[in-house]
Length: 243
Image (cartoon, rainbow, N blue to C red; front, side):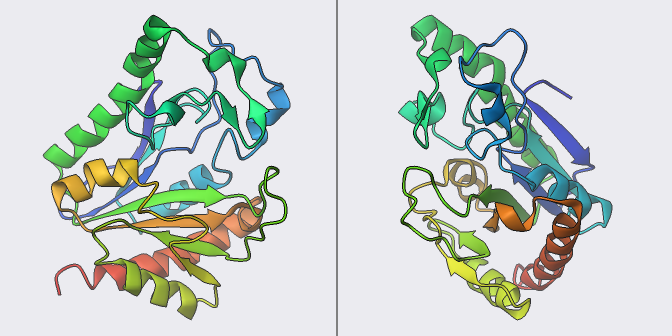
């Protein structure tokens, strides 16, 4: 294990690997983001419910292993390119993050401590146990404070970039669960797909990005229900890998 990531389950060649960039709200004691601590349970700090759903998917054998980001997305956003301005966010949904206004040395130290080890572990895992499929797991807030007028009615979204092999089967499987499934909603994988671009598309591994609406997975009952739905989706989508 590492402060940059934690792993559940055991990776298997030809299996299914889950990756969750924003599964933690942890801020190491020696890092001061200069924000209200209450924000650490907010969507700007963590993908609410994702760690719990990931653990359930591993426990029931729907995925072989899960790699979860070890720190809050406010410490470092691992679903960005390393040179992207937002990798160390100085603001999120109207909230300033003064502690991320770092000089070049501070930025380099933050990336070297968290961002690079996280992605290096994913790279090593894929090299040693190449999966047949990758599931990228995130969650989204029903409404943004900065754009309160923009409704987000979808219960789940499916994201992808150039490789859309599993997108249509995933959308169909989620619709069969009775869910309002968004295709490239509430945002597009064409614009925000850094981890999957690097580790899935970069290795020609089929993948699907799943965004769960946070109010549906905010408690244990909702997390269990969504894990059941995703497990059935994964089983159906996996049938399309070899076909």
